[in-house]
Image (cartoon, rainbow over all chains, first blue to last red; front, side):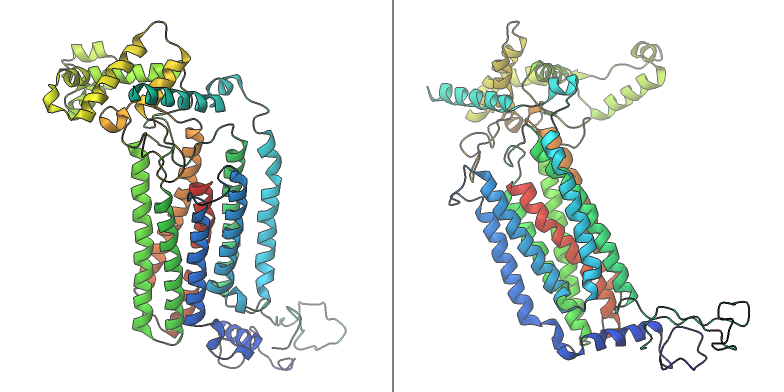
Length: 165
Length: 360
């Protein structure tokens, strides 16, 4: 309440500083404990995160290799890849986007956005299940089915067999 | 700075005397306190990014609905996606995220030339990403995979409609104009005069055509490689099948398989079959319609998602190009930070796009 008695007409600032400078001071005060520039990890930490990201990318790429044990159950691979992607996303957000070191304002912005994104995803779930319930006649006529794929595979096998003879 | 209310109205001249609500007298001083302890630029960038999160959540969500609600969805190999190329692009974007962070760190401690070096590297890595993306798009276009019909040659099923499309294309090849320019001029004249007859009366002659299929058939065996001879034999065979009056559904599947086989799954898929064995690969000028079950929906989602992502990359590159015109010292650190936040977000989107598009 130091400015109470003064006759300043603008935003509350110290003499000779703009509003943005004041914000900067406030921000520094908010997490001044971590020191001047050491607060953002430094080269070593970034390299560590980089290596982790590369390792995680290799892990999701691993699902594509022949050594992946669940080739006949794609759902296992999907769940695994999404877990890996979420981990990578968290690493990027926390360290590259500096959210790890930010003050509490980060929750004000990220939580509502994350909730909106999550609800949006959940709201789409019924659509996944019911997408082919109502199909127009024209679409039913031209829509690909699993049988089409099998037909082409059979044709392919037949031509391979005839070529072998 | 310790005031807790966002704004405190004060009647200046009257202090706290009776008519506090009467703003008609004198003027009112509003005392502001920042709502969030961060600079305006960064606040706006975060707000923008939270809208972007929802934008891409909607796109990815729709993709998931279409992908898992579809009765058939093509395997990555069916649509000629290359996982190693996608993984390489992921690596490029991760590297560019690191370089932009290092540019920010260098700028903070006023190492301007180092900051500029990292920024140039970031720009180059972004450009490499776009180049690889363009290469991938061209590979799709070469296989007739477009998001829409005028150029797209995708068919969903090996049915009668597909058969007639292949026949129509073969007919086109039997009278292909020798020069694309004169053909375009003639088409324009027909459009202008309303009909081919009217165009003929106005003195327009039909452009000269050549029978590409007959040319191929008459080519001496010595002019063709063994593989091309084999492909020519297969092409003649499917022409017979298409002309046959008692064709079966299975025949069209054979035609589809001959034109562009669906490569088998797994690494190295398509090496033993497909790959370069389709007629469209043997004779690129054929450009016959192809069958990829679920391919049209795949193409729509692929080009929409990766296209929007590529647009974001382009915007990022423009921002970096503008930043490069500045002296990247401590004064510019805020700007670099905001540009970096955006760039990390672009990276983030790709982190989800890569597995969803290439590995699912």
